[in-house]
Image 1 (cartoon, rainbow, N blue to C red):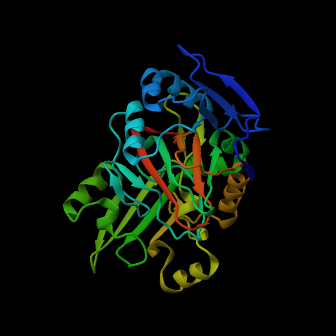
Image 2: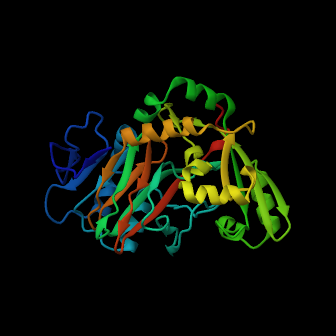
Length: 343
């Protein structure tokens, strides 16, 4: 894992009408990931600058996969939402949830509210779903007192490093995600689908090509088969894009895993992943995926007011454990339908 603090090893000016901003890259990084944009003069208004440079930001995001906006005067949730809305006016709500979040501003959410002592592995946002946001923003309202860095990885690099035999297996079989709601150990179906209406859940599942099964005790089981890789809609690059290593039982710490398996069959766990034909995914295969992610990860330490913009197909993100208060907010946009992707 590479740990960097964005020292200005390389600099250049983005020449666009004036020289208001400059960019930096990580020292020693050969793929210019992520791009770091900073004010080149005092008092640059990031929101106003973005209004005039949307096409430039879009092209740089496609080129680099990730952009960090740092040292701008962006110090409120409202200004963060306004900044994100300049690029894409309609921010997305969060449906078919896989993690607890709170909405604190219209379509602006807390980052995943897992216990602070637990890491969050690198992943793409909602790659288990039938559609996903192509853009995701992270805003640092308060960095953690200790640790709490965000991990990011370029999936251009990830895909190249995965064993070809593993890629072939997953491309052929795809991934099946099985979720069991109402066991009291994960999200309820009401929270995951943001409704109390069973008919609305059934309609969502039909549209998303998911199998849903109501069980006694107000429980729900869903099954969905999704691609393991997708083609980027703009660059036509194929990238690794799935939640298999996140949903699979091997992602749970061993003591908790043993306790779960003592009470549930593998397809009755709160969540699990299989090959698309229902056969088990080998732990060794998923450990290899985790190894590749660890090899390509860059540890990103927050400063208050930072905004990190990711192309959600070209870049993965995760989180280190932390202590003390930490507030990272999230907005998503550019919904893209996975059901059109046949790879």
